[in-house]
Image 1 (spheres, rainbow, N blue to C red):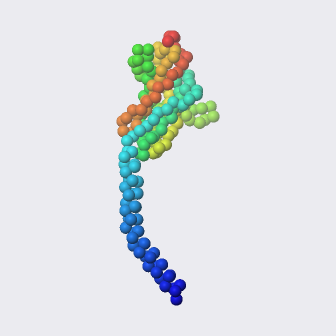
Image 2 (cartoon, helix red, strand yellow):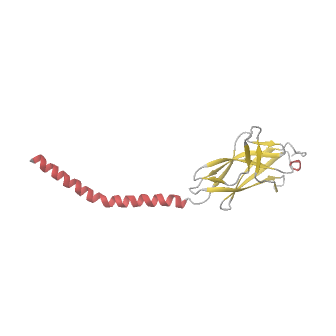
Image 3 (tube, rainbow, N blue to C red):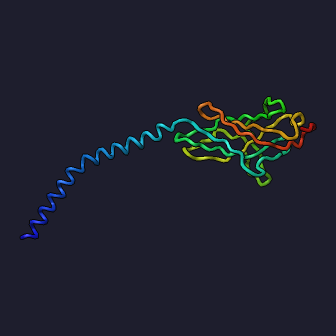
Length: 174
């Protein structure tokens, strides 16, 4: 009989503990929900990062300067690349715009390569390698050329990176 009494008392203690703990579970779940909602709501700013790959990722393809850049989305909001702009920086610091539009080319094996592809959709906290290509009057540019690659996102913000390129078409020495 003593064992049965202990089991009944243990059950009431457990019920008392549950009655005490249930309201705190509601508060705890409310706190977790607020934190889970506030984190992405706070981080809704579009933040793209344009990176130039290390190594020889920028080269000449005939009269077109081509390369690969990495665009990273550092936000909790999805973003899209909607445009590209390219410019060179001369000795005085002035920028000279280059031609840049979507360009498709067929390889010898039949695969199609797209340069300056738009739209490129980037999910939250992801990145993509993007092929770019631009045309310009290269003979007017210095031999050691600085190329400014600018990417425009869905919200109209521009993000850019600068890279040094050896201009093989140049008639001028820098």
